Length: 134
Image 1 (cartoon, rainbow, N blue to C red):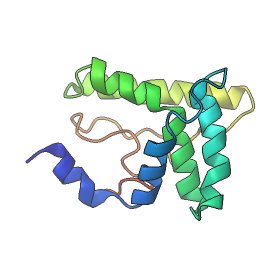
Image 2: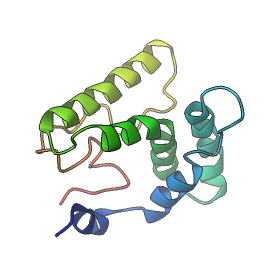
Image 3: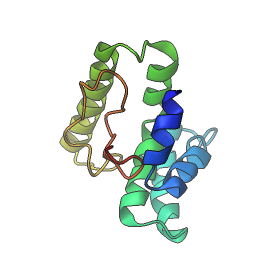
Image 4: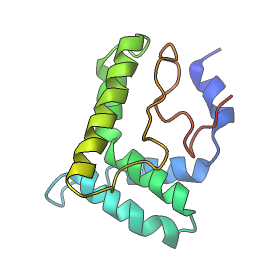
């Protein structure tokens, strides 16, 4: 059975996933880093569209880090546990840099401890609003 068939039933908030999909490139052409600008847009739009604070933070996090996720998914072997560990570390380093700069924007509320080492089958934020543990 394809992995997607296993993951779809674990989605807790499809509207958060759909909004992140819709917004991931919303800031292209505005000047600056479109993922950072898109993150700010997501943080403003989420509540206006009726998303909870947790859903809004999840959308903002997904928009902010979509380039890292895309690069990992399409350019690296995601079946290799080392790739997943490197992805988790990259996210943790980015969050630490943001914290050091005094910004917690783009930091997923449940992502302080990456969930790695699951044979490459689940993303680091497998316990986020998007996907619940099985």
